[in-house]
Length: 176
Image (cartoon, rainbow, N blue to C red; front, side):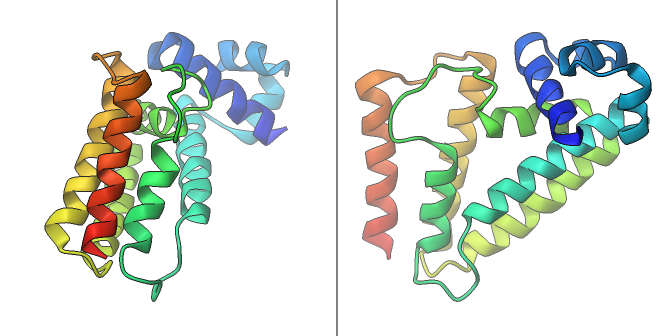
């Protein structure tokens, strides 16, 4: 039931924004009673923390362990966040956007947790065996890419999407 509730939070976040994440709305979206929801999550903040933690766990599972070949972490960062093919923006499966929404709208504690994860990831990128500036540039490009998707700020689509991703991939491969 926990996953069903968190799936519902993700759908509400992406389709209607953080203000729409209310306990009654999430319970209705998940097809559970408000009491059933409260058994697992006591507040809106707890719902958003749950979404963020689940997405971070999924993201971490896609990243290589320490000691991997040079560039492996940076490449996995790119692969886990920008798909090879263009996909519709604001799809609830766009996990990075959902994590960003959860982090920004879950209050200071949830945002602080997201920042801590980013600090760890940035250290891993800087220690990935590539020039740290190149690895950081890839991260910042990826962050800008999903911010553009999240806010519908002219995200690159079609051939441009593929070209930008190919350029980032080339930067990683040249540095490895």
